Image (cartoon, rainbow, N blue to C red; front, side):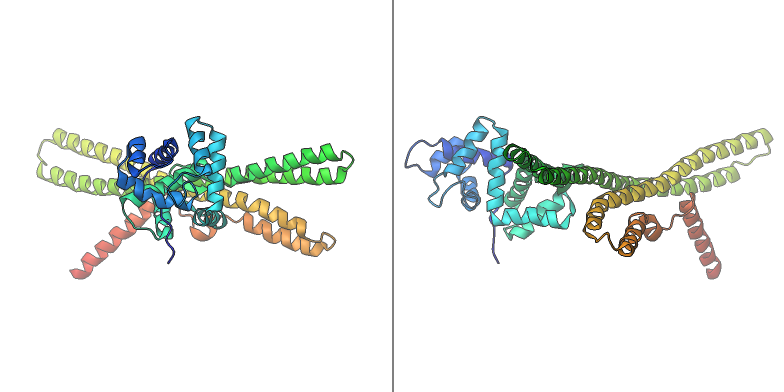
Length: 369
């Protein structure tokens, strides 16, 4: 089983180590020189050497390479484009790191931060400890700096928008070169312009799809919270109802005015509690409905451009095939997940669930009697 040695420190300390190797001016130096320049413990330096060697930042002889020097000086002078460019080259030329990005791109999955950190650790087959966990976070930070991933509300996903935007810029450069070389080649120029326009639409649709997906995840978390509050309020209502029943029974006197005041107070408090319960009941229903709607919008937008490209590949001379395909596609993208995944219940569905539960408990009590 092949092991990829992760960094043993966070991102900031990794940069300190790289700059410490670069700052040694002597031809022959010791580990203590690196320790003094970085301010880190020598064991920490040693634990990171495997990663630095595998990425070509230092050589097998523990001497910094030209690549490492370029990276160190880009940090020293804060040249952001150079930092991104060098790390991107390192990722593309390091099999393990590039495979992480490719897997994220192909799968299209979204990960919680901790979940993706554990995935990196698992895939590397490295030891699971506090050092390698810091190393996993360091890798994520490098991916983020290079714009391979985007982190939104703690959710990590492949930054398709940025990558394709770069592709579009490259195509624009190609277009400019083409126009400079041959202004008369109108067909080829229009073809590239059309591809750029299509890619621009794809980026726009993907960006909206991503936002809708994140909104759907937020609403699902809100749904869980509202459902907890709703269940708690139901229990409070039941306890208060029992309490007021006992109070009204125990404190019942021949003073009619006192009995009426007690009864009105009891109903008033119960009424307020039921209003709170009804509010959370509505929020439970609204959040699950909105979550499904946003999830559906995300699905439609992410699928639309793929379908439209497939339509272009069809032979438009055969109208029957085209019509059949369009019908199937429109049926698919217009079908809401709510139709199959969650039959929408009435607005008071949680109350009905509680009612059914209480009726079952009463039936069980009667059976025991």
